[in-house]
Image 1 (cartoon, rainbow, N blue to C red):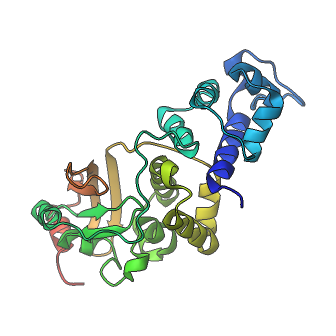
Image 2 (spheres, rainbow, N blue to C red):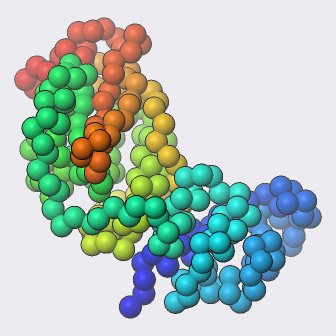
Length: 277
């Protein structure tokens, strides 16, 4: 049986190899003046491995690359820190692989208390597989469908790529959706062979061509606090700063909070999220 981790690692390295600028390596254009992409023999030479061995790596063959080799390939492909960690995870070298849980554990009461205390700032708790495990009243008003969704489908990526109401609220949906997916991918390296990850990606590839295209782009990005904008049917023009918190005693959960900024249309807009729809 094919190993999904090897297949993903090979696909990721192949895409990145084809995207780098040859001028960054002081290499001349190839073919019909093509300025991007390294040949396999070029990256193999830079990384100190044979062309045959590197080809097998990109093909997802049953080989066991050392951490030193993965590090060399990552450095020579000029991967970002997040991308470097990602390929290490795919090769089995994550410092602390997260367990693949069959079902999310119940959210501790103190986590729910924290979410409720953050109200009126919309806030929610996200599992390692990006299931929305808990939320406060304002988030329930901000994100349509979170209350009524089947618990098995209460997943942030599922909402972003399949719920038209969510798409309509995000003025830069294309950029935002790909950014979320890149952040998810950065965290998923050590779990990519697990059944929950496989089910999620297989399902979303089947129901969302947008997801399939974005997933095949192999973008990886670490989370950074940023501005999130919504055009909400009840709250109006809402502008938040998104921040993530990780409780020390529940490190498989991320607390995501949307803190209102002065650019919100009015404080009433945020308060209206708590009103009955």
